[in-house]
Length: 301
Picture (cartoon, rainbow, N blue to C red):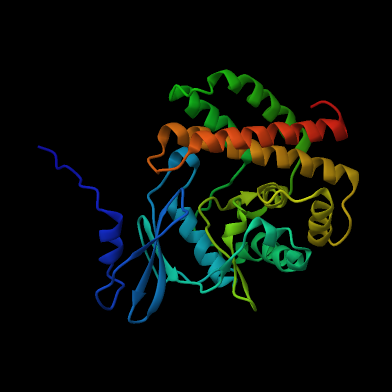
């Protein structure tokens, strides 16, 4: 007779971690659509607790997230990991202000943000230990398409067109340099303490083209074309040429396609209470507009 594995309630799990020095009462944090997050006040201080198992459908593997989080802490980009076990990670709680897209679009913040991205790309690899994944957006898109087919998604009729565009966008991106990417540069993953800017949430970290983080940051916060040029100029140390800008614009489309298909997969597989159908529609519309802008500037894909 096989034993039945009982799933532990996340609140109970957070409350009974062996790292606490006394009785704690975890307070849920709203906003997460991948993990369950808590704030815990322990006699030693205030802590952030992230609870989430592997999510192979989205390429999220917790060994990889933990390696990246530890490397980010060693590089001074993120708070230290004070405790970890499979599916759980604990860090000091950052008493700062979570950025919004308006903060990413503020020219006064550009140099601070880009400095953090460059340190992620070029310093973090010096602190990585053990196996680390690669995040290639076009593989992710193809894998999502297979998952949508297997799951009988309501979006099956769209897949041929989306995959055809993915092939053409991958060709437009062309050969790449490889850095260590964060790969999820939402505004909310920047925490501002005033004299220090933190980069958090390493679920999707992995080796990638620097173009993806730059395009992802720009598309997530809907930067203007002027701010995109400023972003690239600050990152590169010189204004981008037309070829680089074309590759960046193609990667912006790819970033939006990945976000769209991430949501389509979540529609049929996520148990989190979130309107994924509306999110899919919103991102599909943004992807179509981005493809239209690419073709207007550079010709048909």
